[in-house]
Image (cartoon, rainbow, N blue to C red; front, top):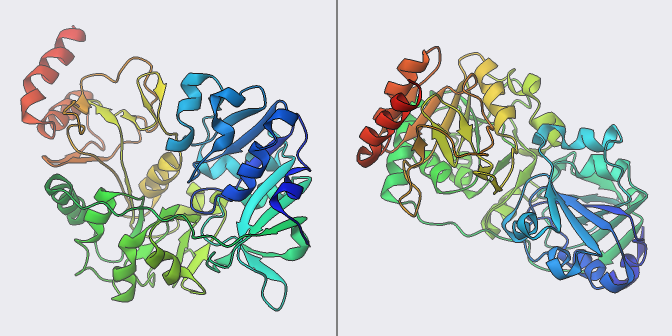
Length: 421
């Protein structure tokens, strides 16, 4: 591993290269900036990644001749590239992102990572994000690392030796921290409904946001819960410290919490630092349905942009307009469904922040179906729980209308039945 400046490291990038960027809170922004600063010298360089945090200067539409963004999950900082034309979206399950690199479907030239400083044995840590990074490193010509003393040291697939790094840039900056928004009354009610579906000794998967936090806040009296999830945030800390989440009944990584990336506050990063209870693994393992299903009573809690009356779940687009991505929703919906005593839950408010109905007779034209009606089990809003498993279409329609906002129920039902005549 050779220490250089960010500017010198950026010089290895050539026109026509494909770059993979370490994801989420681990995004090495000093490296993406240094490469972006070379825009006038480069052409047709592709940046690919799941969602990243912080500025993304390479996503500036004015640099379209130099850089193109290929998102496997579309984050807020690059969402504009889809409509501006300097970005594309590749639909892929999070479990299969590493496979894209290992099979050579996407050949990687340069990987940008952020790691903790090496210990006395020469080992660094990828810290708060693993996802597809290890596979990308294995198949890249250049591995460039930002070495940051603020990166937590985590265990599992996140551990790497300095011999795996070609160039290193020492730059110490705070790890990106997400804001914890207050839980609304609606989200609190949704959290209560979901919590009632969770039994003792369940293994949890959930994402970030107010609804997952609302659920977690209701679980303080539960016993022997496990954690096997693609990501987690601050909401689990109190439950781990109180012993509610002890992972003692899990089958996979028994006695340990398993994740592929983390995103939260500074408290979260201090909590996971050198904490052997937390194990970070590649998304090809954490999100593998055949691995997930081995845990007992897996409860997968995910969200959606809209759900139709038959149970089709749209979670990645607003009609034809791409918003996020497939991510790991289907990995865990199916894994939970196949787990003994498992439950797959889609939780969402019945209306958007702008008052638009989200329980709809039909998905918008062009909307992507992330979870099919055959995979859907429980749909939860602030108006209750619709159990769709094993139900006919007619039974599903009745159940879904009951959890829609009362102001829209009559219209939803009328539109649906008039359209299918």
